[in-house]
Amino acid sequence: MDALIPQKSPYAKEVEAGKSYYWCSCGQSKAQPFCDGSHKGSSFTPVKYDATESKTVYFCGCKQSANQPLCDGAHKALV
View 1 (cartoon, rainbow, N blue to C red):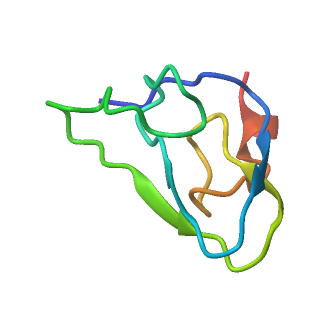
View 2 (spheres, rainbow, N blue to C red; view 1 turned 90 degrees about the vertical axis):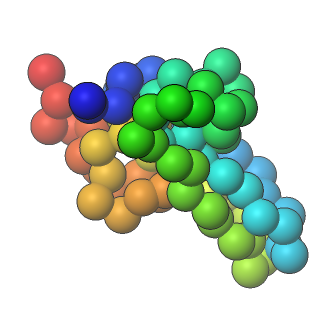
């Protein structure tokens, strides 16, 4: 089963140093780009991101990034 593509651009999110974030890998979460448990019962699991500094992070929105959970520009190749 392939991940759903919630949007064909990254999600710019402010993260706080010392906090952990769980990126949705299935594309079904209503709290994009973060996990809300919608993957339960599937083969998908969230990807943990540990913020080492407070800054804006660009999380993958198309779920195709080779650098999950961060955007690597893979959305530019989608039709």
